[in-house]
Structures are given as C-alpha cells and as structure tokens.
Image 1 (cartoon, one colour):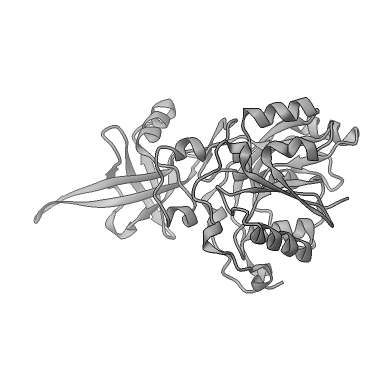
Image 2 (image 1 turned 90 degrees about the vertical axis):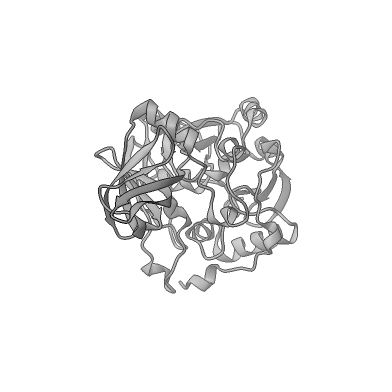
Length: 351
C-alpha cells in the first residue's frame, strides 16, 4: 500500500493545543461497522457491556525536555552554548539516549548543566543522538528532572506554544505509575475519577499494562511503499495478573478493549495466535497495517491521528480503510478536535 492511501485534509483549527476540562467532557465519536453516534467521554460506560475489560497503559511521562548550558574554557577565554536536550531512552548502564540541539556544539566528555542540581556528561554521540550520564540517580534524579524539565509535547503542539507547568498535569494520565515514557498514551487523558466511577458502576473491569511510549511515535513515515517503513521499538510488559484477567474476561464472553494504540500494540504483541495472553516483557516494534489479523483486541478507544502516520494505518487495519475514511470525514465535518489533546473515538469493528 502507498503512503498516500492514508492521507487526508485536516483544517488547522481542529488541532487541539489544550485538553477539554474536565477531561471526561471531551467529545466521543462511537463508530461501528455501519453507524456513528456522538457522545462525550463520560458516556463511555453506556457503549460497553458489563463484563467487558478496558486495558489501560500505566506508563508515566517524564519531563524529558531540558534546556542547559555547555561551558568551555580555552585560549580565547570562557565560552558557553545553549543546549536543548530531549531524553529518549534509558540505557542498561544507567545513561540516557538523548537528542541534543545543536549536537555540533558538544564534545564527548563535556558537561551540560540543566540546573544547579542537575548536570550530565556527554559520553558518546552516534546517528544524530548522544549518550548522557547524569550526576544523580534514583529518586534524586527524578526530583531534579521534575524541577528542571518540561513535558515533551508533540511537535504539532510545540510548534504552536511552549510546554508550561499545566502540561505536567494535563499530559499525564490519572493512573500513571511506571516512569519511562517521553510521550503520553493520549487516549487515556480523557479519564477522570467521574468516568472511572461510571465504569465501575456499569461492571466494566480494568487491567493495567505498561508500554513506555517513545519519541519514535512522532517520526514521520518517509517511504512511499509502507512495506518499506522501519517501525520504532518501545519497551513494555504484561504482568501475570494482567494476562490472567484478560484470559478470564475472554473465557466469560467479555470484550477486550484497549485504551489507546499503545495498549493495543502491546497486547497484540504479547498474545498467542489464538488470543491467549501470558506474562510478557520486552521490546515491540509491531507495525499494524491493513490486512493484519487482530488476535485479542475487540474494540479500541483512541484519539484522532495524523495523516499518513503509522497510527492512521493501525486504525485503518482495525476498521477497514474505507470505513475509517468515512469516520474521519464525519469527525472533521462535526469539528471534533484532533491529536494528543483532542477528542476520542470508540471503534467497534463488529456489530
């Protein structure tokens, strides 16, 4: 299939730069194989059955965007350069892979100061990225990073406004627990205490899994034939308890409903061909495109995605390419808000 098969025109005014308040007041488009209904996120329980199970990603976004100074002494005197860093992935030796701008302004062995408390030594550079070893670890590192860092908002928001203190609340799910993501599982941003109470009252169960969303989720597809695209890899895990809960739900006839493409990609990676789940831990680079046979996901709650993105390909696989075009055309005509801080859809491929 061609990249152009997943393109569409999106008015600039539909790109959300702030979330709805309260969270569950965002609009919800409920799309089956034929019909479309419009509601709000708070109404989600009405479209689920008692015994269904939502699968939620409990990754926690770190404030991975840092601004610092590289200081250098030489024969011409002391100089300094402003360095912007975006943390990408923690490495096994405790260092971090990061994007540095401008990378040419640093050398291996130099130190970048991000605050009075937080600094990092450049210990290697490769393929446009750098390895950083911070001066702090554990809780001390988390506290200093939280004080010095900003949320790594997606490029389509960052281009319109800078991250601020409110994003540290808005760009985080209410159940975030496992630190390590540099992007939020944004379909989960519609959930608040009121919605969680409504789900419990309806008899809808929840299961938590972890997929640390990486910056690769924002990388554009640059090939014309999507079969040539190299998918980014992300780390995740499914506990024994989570696997058992999903298996029990399926055995009783309940539906498995991942919230967000991150949760869906993780459980589709971990599931056996017959949909049976087992504990799983590792990295996934699963690339879901039309023709993929879903093993465990029965429905999907997700936001509205970028044209020509891998996530647009995923929802096209889930609902069918023609059907997803009809759904997106409806959303645009009704002025649903798009992308990370935008509105949500509940996709139901079966009647």
